[in-house]
Image (cartoon, rainbow, N blue to C red; front, side, top):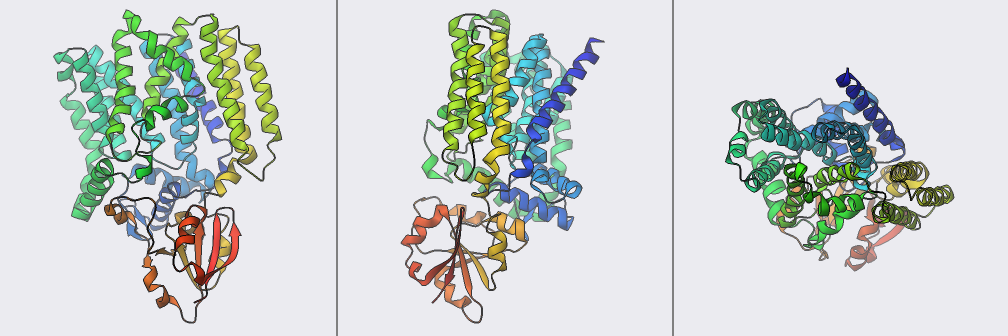
Length: 531
């Protein structure tokens, strides 16, 4: 009976989380440069019926494994090529993650209130909410990492073969989502935890043949088929460029700072940053949970350390560190205090988040943010009013942040994202008769929205971002050096789109004077070649 009630609880949490995360996705266009690559590849898969080999611009594309493309293409087949269908896999993965983390928390802490709080904290945390709306692989990796790590902890700690098989199966799905890191990083973290526990018995438990067999049965069919059909091209591009080069040579050198993820983690956990870091500091004193505490700390900070050593820095690389940090925050419920200090650690990050979100809207022009500001003031008032009671304060923060998220999506987030997408200029640019070129960078969302594969014009001017030339191999769209621009002139006019991010580079270009403006959009401008 108790098990049935628990199952109903997690189903309810899944459904509520799903509806909460689903809200407003139809207003969010496909953005450049990351989301559009996944959306366009999935669109080509759905249209071609080739469910084995991802393609983009009609060329094979080995950037990521198959999982995100399968799920997104299936969503397109069911619901059409819409923004909602594009974001549905991440929404579904986010809702499943919230329910799954709650279920695992109850299994580990034997406390339903802490388990519900784990789900609540997760679904309202800043980075989780953002990534659950994004067309990227990271929410799926997040989902599969939960059972990979937590079932492995249970399996090693309790000598449970069943949980080890679950962990290996989840790791296989993670490898089909993100690549080798889905197994390598969890494996390193688990071995590090076993070593910290000084238990060689646990180390031996890490390698059950049943789990390894399960992993191979799930992961190897697709990888094997890709190697069979594409051979060294797949190996050199997928493993070489998108894994080895990414780890050893920065794709975006301007982001390569050692403190990058140390700043990102507390921001990612808002509004629950205070609880997470409080438990990181004090939870070690609780001898009852010492193995779990050590495991969560190694998971969180081991992930931060692993990606800090990698050359390429991305915002979502350390996203899975949110899982142990949120689980630590949930343990605070077991030791909840009615002291002023404890309440301040709850309230202050929440107030900071509300103020920061409100301040961020000032940079988003063209939208009436008055309802958002009114809601922000009400949220601050409600949280301050609930300051003296831990339970009421947690509930007030959760409701306030959730309401602000919903208002943000409903009010103006879609308009802001349209400035990072080709949706506003796509039809105008596509309708102009002649050649269509993109200056320096390429808008895959333009191809997604129009079906036309335009040409990327490569300017002979030094880019401020100096990086390894090997990164140029990732471009698969048609490209043209500016020295060959005149080869296009004839009876057809030539139009060039320049994004806002490339305007400074465009102004330094020696051929700038040969172009006159035609039309301007929030995301960039269209020029015509007059040589």
